Length: 285
Image (cartoon, rainbow, N blue to C red; front, side, top):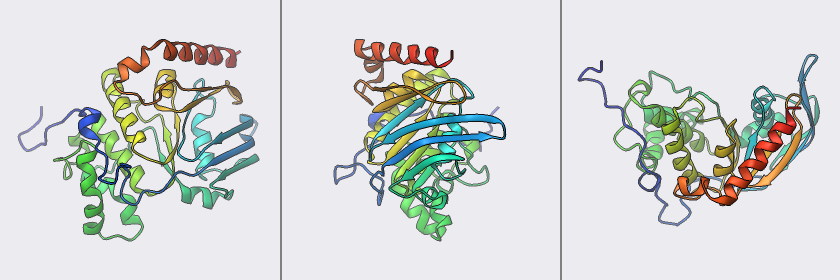
């Protein structure tokens, strides 16, 4: 039972209310960088005798959203860790914005893991502005930079709420805002809605569609949900079972179109989903 001292839990607003473009028309986070290209060639990686990724080639253009789908355990999360410089591959190459060292990749990528990992003792605005504090900004300065974005992201009025006082969807918004405020040109999104119920997940997909459309960042979205990948991405890469290899690539029909329901029930979307599911089945053989 919630006591009277606890803040109410709010559900996500519609994208039209939660996202507003900036006066300049590009809708970017203030000071947000343009996207960077990602190039992966002959990538291989394993843990001891367990091969996770084998001879993977992928290219992501600046400002493009690439969805990555594949069977559970095929190495999708490992792929993001490799791209972001959190691990070094044991074969092949990865370049982000033309730079290949782990440190340079780490400096160009912002990673959003499956769990929101918000610090429970910090207010939402301080969680969102954590990267700014880590770069030396004072708390007051970091809050000033983050505060205007809370209205744009449908979080107005919850700046001082602790994570435990927020709904699952709102926690994911704070986590995504924290990822943007890191100021990196490449966003690595690892199944950001996996823990949400089906209704909230659909709402958050529509919200994220609007958020990505308002940004010029390059994004790589890992998900086990083919429909989610096709809706949120410009292009979808289908991976095989471990060790992961590329099975198919397909362009997404009308990515990030609103309203979501009309987009995902359109005949061309249904056809793309069937093709992706067939590729997944092929990759599991």
